[in-house]
Image (cartoon, rainbow, N blue to C red):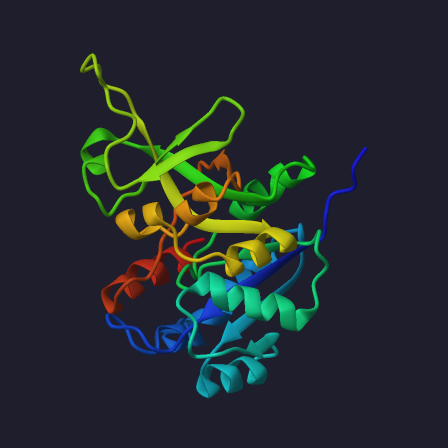
Amino acid sequence: MNAFPECHGIIPARYESSRFPGKPLADILGKPMFWHVYDRASRCPQMRSVTLATDDRRIFDAATALNVPVVMTSAEHRSGTDRVLEAARTLGLDNDAVVVNIQGDEPALEPAMLTELVTPFSRPEVRVATLVAALGREEAASPDRVKVVVAQSGRALYFSRAMIPFDRDEKVHGFLLHIGLYAFRMEALERFGALDPSPLEKREKLEQLRLLDNGIDIYVTETRHACHGVDSPGDLETVKHILENH
């Protein structure tokens, strides 16, 4: 029987943002947003460690003051996944370790979602995993809602902004919404970082297609939990209400 691999969460926290500059430092009930993400992620029993990865001295200093493990990373990264890779290298994680990319704008993260995310790694063939949730037809029509088609084995067949799968007989079926939490074995994360953006990735503007385009399978778990991401300052009140009443 295979032993379950060590799991390490990394939270990319970038200061610059077109819609919400300084978002990781936004005050929520007296603590910066990144602290809440760290606190929630640390409650997941599968996480051996949780570390913040930033490119900004203000965030680094605030994390240090709050005893949140933090590493400084380059400001030149094209994506949060690239930042996570640099941090994982700095931490010296083993090739078989599971690296969890935890979104830094989810201060109300449900720790059970991380458990759901890493559960497929009990199977040695799983190299990358992500989450999906049920999605109604009306919401599925939006290109901002990324849909995924999944094989019976749990392997993702394709991700798209289009409404997939297409209902040829015009019957009303549900869809699966992709939730942007990812977990990688370290060797798969290294492989991802070495690949150039793929044609499908460029066309759909979805970086997970780089993996599928290069023959790297992504396994999917459906979650019953909701995400409450902070995209703009107006979302802070909603998150505060959730945390106050949790």
